[in-house]
Amino acid sequence: YLASRIFEVVCEAMTPDGKEDLFRRATSQSRDTVDSEMADRIFNSVDERFAAAATTTQEKVKVLSLVSDLGMTLQETIRCVPSAILHYLNLARRFNKGGVDFDGTFKRERFNEKKNDRFVEFLSRSNVLLTLLWGDTLATLSDGTKTSIASVARKFSFTRIHRMYLRDLEMSKEMDLKLSRGSTTRILKVLARRKTERMTCVDEYAVDAYAGWRQITAVVEEMREMHGLIGDGDERALKRWIRISRSHLEGEYLSEICESSNVAQHCSRFSLSDKIRKCFASPCDHDHDGHCTNCHQV
Image (cartoon, rainbow, N blue to C red):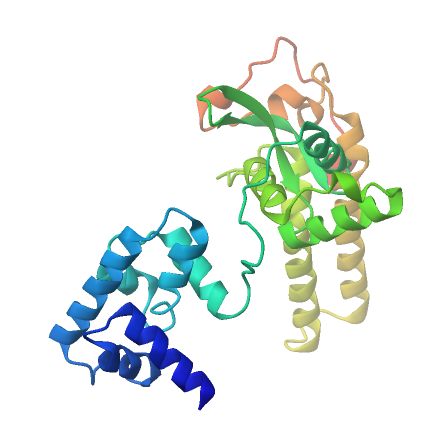
């Protein structure tokens, strides 16, 4: 009863002329029972109050929190409250679920070069990111400056990388250099590997091929168990070659490639060029008259 009474007071403060309709709309399971003209009047009032709210994020979010959980999609809410933007609507939904704390002053995190360098140093380790041997990403900074960042392949999700980062800070007793979750996520989005139509780098190929190897192994097992197309001996032999091919691509092949190799598969200019998109092709100045027994076997 107390919670219901509190919500009635909030509705009255928001829309003095339509408090009953706003309360019924917020507590009803169906939006179809609310008169459309009254609903428009209510949301017009909310929109005016949102636009007139102070410039602080806290007050804007609290206004929107009253209409953010009425069972409407974000598109419908934006249509009803045109002044709202997606960022504030997401904060309002989190605020209703207790996910946003406004006890303190809401401030943006200032750029801290030491904290930023510490996180980049953590990302530079090979157990977190693989730096691709081919391609780069062009990023535009807030001041308009453009910079080229080497393309990378993430080994883990954003959440897992953030947890690893916190654990690394705890072990090294450098928690004073911790970046916020939002800052680390923005950096990871800049560094995220782009999708490509073709496998253009051996590192990227090795990362993306993990799922393929698992699928091939599952097909081999299905051929024996469900269809009886192969016997136990054939299954073991096929799985062995799958393991050999994976080991070769992750180890020997990666260590043998170079720009001047006379083996086509090991020449970085030849094997990492895109044969379809000519702007990404690099012509070689030497012949490829050698061959690799392991590559042919794989």
